[in-house]
Amino acid sequence: MFIDPDLSKTVNKYSNKLWINDWIKLGFYLRPRYESKNNLNFDKSNHAYTDRIMQTSALYFLIDPNPYVTFKITIQDTRVWGGASPANVGDIRSGFFSNTPTLSSDPSIPGKPNNSIAPNSTSIREAFVMIQKLPLEAKMQVGRQIWAYGDQRMIAGGNWTINGLSYDGARIMFDYEHFSSHFFAARPYWTQSGVNGVLSSNDPKVNSTSGNTNPSASQSDTTIFGTYNTFKILNEIVLDVYNIDVVKKWIPQTTPASTVDDVLAINRKRQNDQLYTTGFRFTNRTNKNNLREGKAWDWTIESAWQNGYNGQRIHKRFLGYDPPGYG
Image (cartoon, rainbow, N blue to C red; front, side, top):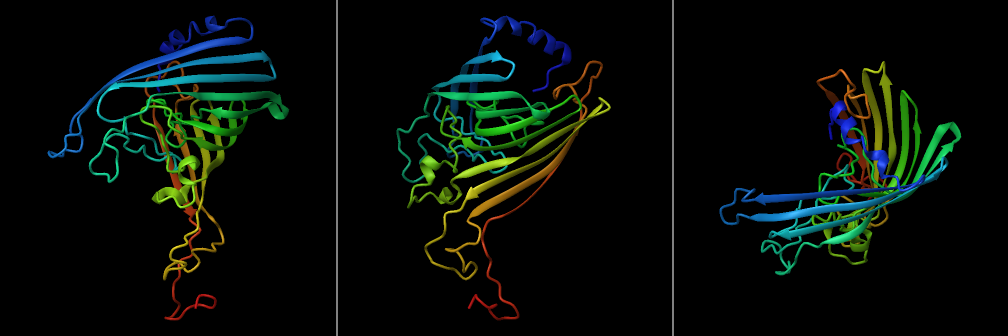
C-alpha cells in the first residue's frame, strides 16, 4: 500500500510505545469491512445478492530477547455477519494458491449442501523464529511467515482479502544498503482461516487422498521456491530481479493406462508439474517501496516470463510411424 513519506512518519510515530518491556512488543490489528453486491454477473435469472459485514482482527507478540534471535506469533480471527455467500475472491499467486471455492448454497453445483455456510475461524497467521547476525550479515527466518515482494503481484501477504496468505517455510536474507537478496522455499498455508477460505486445490489434507474424485487432485503437494533480488541505483531507481518456481506433485494417471497422446501416463520420467517465473521490476519507490521525500509521483515498469513442464510426454508420429519404444 502506498503511503506518503510524511504520513508514514505520523502512522509510525507511536510504534515504540507498544513495547511491554525491553524485549517483548505487543501489537494489534482490527479491520471491519462492509460489502454490498448485486448481480455482478449481469444474470437476470440469478442476481447473486450479497450483503454482509466482515471483520479481521489480529494480535501479535514480538519477542526480541537478544540481537541474535527474534520470535513472532500472530493470532488472527475472521468473522462474517449476514450475507448469502463467502467473499469468494481467493488469490492466484503463480499457480500456488487457487481461487476460493463457493461455500454457500449454489444450485448450479451438483451436491452442494443447501445449508452450507461460510466458516468463521481463529488461527495462527504467523509463528516464526528469525536468526540474525549470521556470516555476511545474513538472516534466516523459519516457520509460518507472511511474504510480500515488490508490488505483491507474484508473492503477497494478501492482506486486502479477509484472511490473507501465509507460507510455511524458510528464507535466507542478505540485506544491505544498496542491495538485497532473498532465497526462499515454502509450502502454502491454505487451510481455511477466514470467510473467503483460500482453500486451495493444492491442499494435501483434502486432495492427496487416494481415489479423490476432485479434478484438482493431481495438483496436490505443492512447493514454492526461488530468489528475489533488489538493487538500488543512485538512490533514484530500484531494480528487482526475481525467479519464482512452483512444483506440484503429479498423481499418475491410471485409467486408462495409456492414451494416444500420452503413452507414458503411468510411468512418467518426471512426476510433477513445474512452473518457472522470471521477471524484473523498475520503480522510483526507493524508500522501502515508498517514495522518498521530495518526490510526488511514482512509476513502475514490470515484466515477467513463464515456462514450465508438466511431466507429460506427448506421443507424436514421425513420418506416419511410431518412433522406437512407442509402438
